Amino acid sequence: MNNPTKLQTLSAVSAEPQPCSPTIMAPAHNKKTPRYLAVHTSLMLMTLLVAGSFPIAAAMMASITLAGVSLGGTDLMLLRFALAAMLFAPYVFVVFGWRLPSLAQARVYAALAVPLVVFFCCMFASLNTTTALNTGALFTTVPTFTALFAWWLNREVTGRRRGLGLLLSTFGALWVVFRGDTGALMNVGLNHGDALFLVGCLFLAIYQPLIKRWSLNVPVAVTTFWVIVMSGVWLLLAVILNGLWDTQGEGDLFGSIGHRLLDLPATVYWGLLYLSVFTTLLSFFVQQLGALTIGPARTSAYSLLTPSLVMLISVMIDPSLFAWVLMPGIIMVVLGLLMVQFDQSTTGKAQRVKRLEV
Image 1 (tube, rainbow, N blue to C red):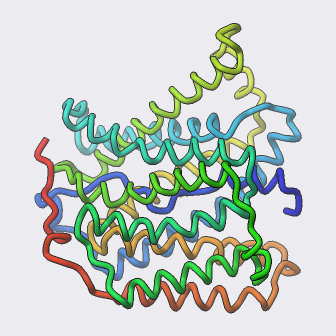
Image 2: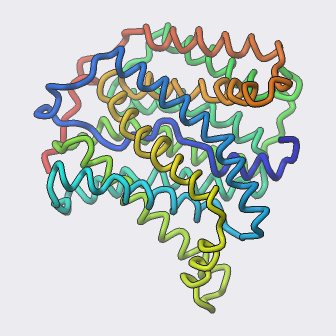
């Protein structure tokens, strides 16, 4: 992990936008809304699964490198969303029936997919000129931005306890990212790549408040599926545009991609299966339940656990990576997260966001 190039590639493949949750359940489907404790437990499990994607992504990238296949991060993300949609489609169509969304619903799904795709595109583009360490530090700003957007769009109030909790857990996450080296944190040099990634973080932060703002009178699974599909469509357009730019419109673009896919080793497809099922399908579904029951700000705060959980998994794989200097950061993250979750500040408007009847 000392190679900056490997760190950048790993960050691009495995970074999971924690606030990603595609849909809002309508009142008619709220009779079986999970209890708060079940939602918190599910969010914890989901964050652990997301953290587990880092070593899996490392194995994937090592396999791709050994195979000598040239495959970009956007290509892998497209495969990830396409596989997730194919795996989820049978359940959605069998349980809810084959029904295409209305034009109004399709506009909402397409709009909700935009922040996801913008985040991924900004992340991949920024890693050409910045480092995984810088992006890891900037990603800790997402929960705070989410709380600001939640107030702006939904009037969800961030109380004093929640604000202090976000501040404490953000500092703790930064402590883990920089392994307690405050000097390195203070001397981080930011460039235009960092600015581009920060733009992506802003889009990711506004995503979850928009979910609550643009609630649809549609079952959760249906809207989850169609937002994944729309994300795949946007990513496909990005891949086509990148390919046309690289080839200057010459050559067989899809044939070239097809040949590269056939050259991929089996371990890459197993890794894609993990990312598609656990860190796309399940994480989208669980986080959208979090947006419904505990709000965007509380749900987004769980992303601050990711650096600590990644370090925990890494230590389990290689105990020599453990360092006591990490413990203060982990403790700050946990205490800050508890402060965020136990803060009850909100307003009536935040609880009664108008659902879109489309």
